[in-house]
Amino acid sequence: MAIVHGTDQTFNTEIEEGLVLVDFWATWCGPCKMIAPVLEEMDAEMSDKVKIVKVDVDENQATASQFGIMSIPTLVLFKDGQPVDKAVGFQPKEALVQLVEKNA
Image 1 (cartoon, rainbow, N blue to C red):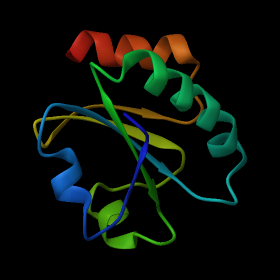
Image 2: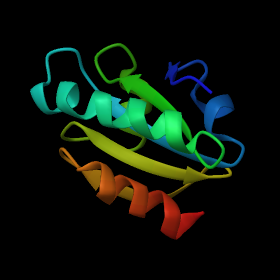
Image 3: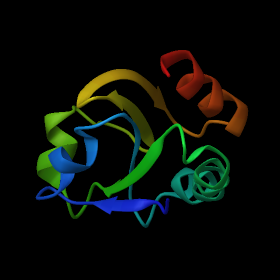
Image 4: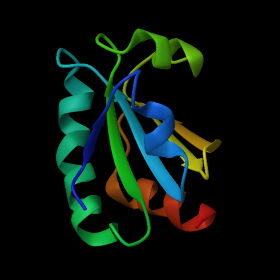
């Protein structure tokens, strides 16, 4: 499964089923660029467990404000449409894998 780019229009559909890790990010954000390859690795290794959706906060302000995103990157883990966990700032891969595993 490839990483999905979510928008205000598609967001609810993207998160409604299963475990979904949403990366709220922006093109100008340094730590967001650092976390991108980590998410790509996770997608390659864990696509059977978790779907990864990236939401650009500049282009999708309604969704970002709906979830109170104040700083980026913010990663929110959803389970069947409901937020169950959250990590703010750059996270090493191990921390994100652990976040997914404990909520799987």
